[in-house]
Length: 146
Image 1 (cartoon, rainbow, N blue to C red):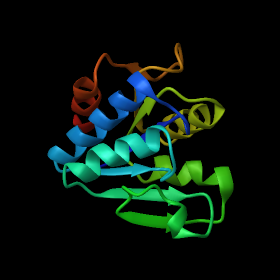
Image 2 (spheres, rainbow, N blue to C red; image 1 turned 90 degrees about the vertical axis):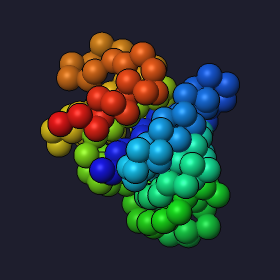
Image 3 (tube, one colour; image 1 turned 45 degrees about the vertical axis):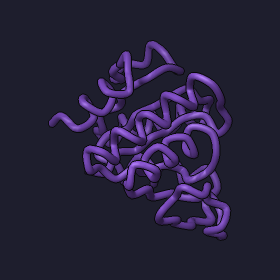
């Protein structure tokens, strides 16, 4: 299953660790991680997945695949800027959100509009339709459940 991981473009500490753990679990369970391919939550999740032997699709805002974080295994360039957020969530069967600002909020909204399951591991609260989770394991468990 392809699962989108969305979140802050800059993060550290606890959020970075949670995102890395999400990526690791996704890879260990044979899922493909889809993200925006840049820094922060995207890089942390990519690192977790890549180091666990998984595949990472990074959907980039620009035209240069070298802009992807070093853990992306397949960089997709778009020249779409933030409009690529739609492609990030459209290409996952579910989305796991960690922290983030309005870009993450836009991805949450688009994922819900597309009928995707959205699991929230920190960050935005009280959004109708999202499912709060307490851990990376619970996020992946619920993302992969049909």
